[in-house]
Amino acid sequence: MSDQYPPSGPTPSGQDPYGQQQPNPYGQPQQGQSPYGQPQPPENPYGQPQQGQNPYGQPQQGQNPYGQPGYGQQPDAYGSTPYGTQPYGAGPYGSATDPDKRPGRVTIAAVIALVLSALVALVFGFVTVAVAAARDQIVDELERELRNQPGAADLSPDALATAVLIVSLVVAVWAVLGIVFAVMTLRRSKAGRILLVISSVLTAVVSLLAIGSLVSVVTLAASIAVVVMVFTGGANDWFARRGATPAQY
Image (cartoon, rainbow, N blue to C red; front, side):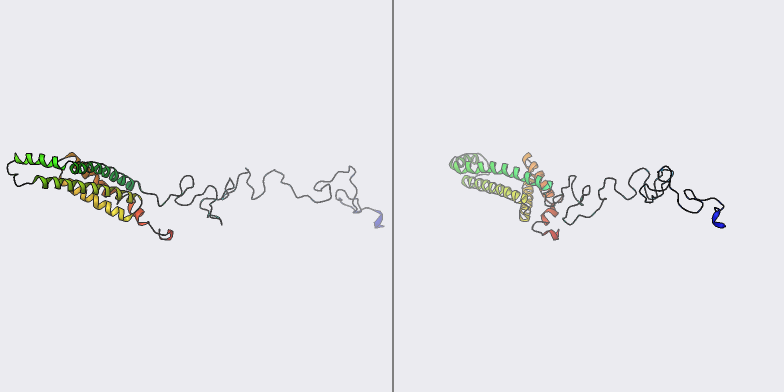
């Protein structure tokens, strides 16, 4: 008797009272069912992003918006750093500062020594050549001058001419050596720097002895400037790295 009457109570949508699935009369898939027979994931009814997704499409915290590595990233296996990062000591265009670049003060000191030494060498070289070429005329002129000077009878004109010739030659050679010392200093020679300092100190002493002239004041100031500049402005470190290996820097 129980098989002739349908069960009481509501039945699910799409099933008959006896629990069998009935076909859809319109041929369309039901809600929540894929038209290909595969189940679909549940959709967000409010259109909001799921958990862990940025609602504005922007990168999350800790992520570079341009897809580049962050600051301070180490170089890769080939020794090159990623774009946007530069090693310590690099210039604005990625070129590292050259530790062997000559300090500007050393260059200025060497240029001062070169210019003054060249001028002195020209002047005293000309005097040496003139005295050697016209020695007899110079001796006669000195003899007339000394004859008119009281107390100068003991002075020998020939000895005076010889003294002028020797002093002029010594100063000219000294000036030429000053040019050589300046060039050696520019070439990062430690011995050249020491010799240039010695030459500058001797020039300052001679300038003090003849301080009455304007030329002596110029040579005195230039000599002091050369001595100071070859020991300041990174000059000591620059000369100390001469011949050192990169591991000793």
